[in-house]
Image 1 (cartoon, rainbow over the protein chains, first blue to last red):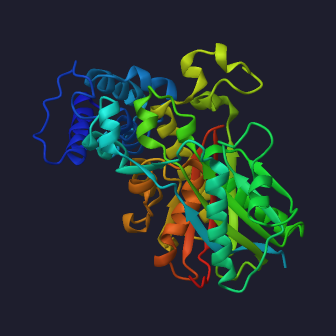
Image 2: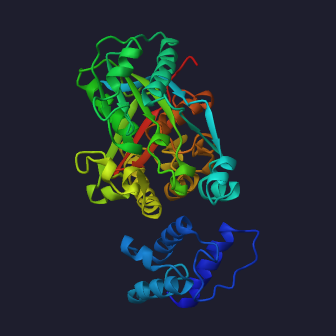
Length: 89
Length: 332
């Protein structure tokens, strides 16, 4: 999955979570909490990523995913080995 | 044919003292909007000093017995109490509850599986009925987590509430309305630290010298949420498969009311329509072992005999469990 696809997935997720808020800009260094994804929503987001990208995210990875950049880098690195495009990943 | 547990009565009880989000907002750095948004909870109940788990269990038990008596059933020969907040570390609370309900010298014991306690207890009761050890069981889930919460912990203070729920189970057959059809249970002791009161047991007996945080209930919220969704989903799927149900067959999904977001996420993962996911957490919060039977008691007025009901829970241990049953034909 490419970085921009991860950012699109995140943008859609945030919009579903906060439909009345303007679309966030998602700077690389912003914390996920700052863009409206609290610790529990992050779990929901990772379930969504796992489903749509067909990857598994171990518990140990959760504390390392704090910023927008962390999320993008983690998902792109995990799905780098996938040879098949799925559902926008 | 194997005897199976059949629900013959349901009842619930919550203490009268209400804890509002406004009160919590005056104690902690939080707001009503934040609590509602994160948990779906508006109020929760709390025992007053001098009130205990046994008091709530007796009240819920009496309500369930009254419900069962209305259909002509009478008496029980076993009391099972699911709780993690017994009146005392020793002995169990169930014998006191049986005594106070005037049930005579029936066997009575506690089950300690935190939020999974009621589902675990249901499987034990069903097993004892199937074995012929008991004909009628009073199964109660009751907890008073307000008595073990860390006064400085905003997260747990907003979520947990006190309460009790109970069912009467009689021996019957799988095809009857109210029959318990099957279970899926599990545990993972490697994750014991996720949900814990660290001191006060045999591992760290001296609470007076323990670190402050170790004297109280503590929960790693994000990790618990993650594991709860995974395990409740998988366990519920297994219970449905055992009963031969598809997601669309489930009339009511009564999951442990941990927080509204877990219920929504698990419902989505299972493919169960939102209007079939029962939610009463807004008024009572997370009542631990009482959560499922209290929800069953609350849902009684809008349920029909034969409705397919799926239960699922995840709790400390960690433990998890799911059960499939049909709604009984109750007089109330």
